[in-house]
Image (cartoon, rainbow, N blue to C red; front, side):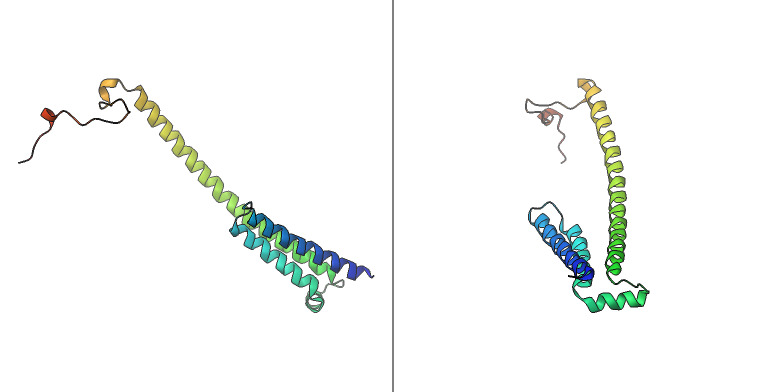
Length: 144
């Protein structure tokens, strides 16, 4: 078995394993569908490059790469860079959302603290269940 054939076999096995792993993580609900699509596309591209020798050789000759299996590694590095960029954008968005939520939580905690510090005369009458009671009937005004 030549080195090229061994490397192609290894690349096919690894990408097929990645496909199975992604499907299993989605099935177990450990990976959301949004991110699974990215990983599946990456794995399918790598699988196509690993199995279709003519495609790999053609891309290698167009790119001026002497050793065609090197295209697999170049494609893998490119896909990893795209995935890293996508995850960096998602992380930045989540970080911004986390900051806004922390600020809102702080404001709500301050409002609750201010509400609890108010004297009992400033708050509405509360019944035993913690709900508010309507004002007595003689205090109600009737439009008419």
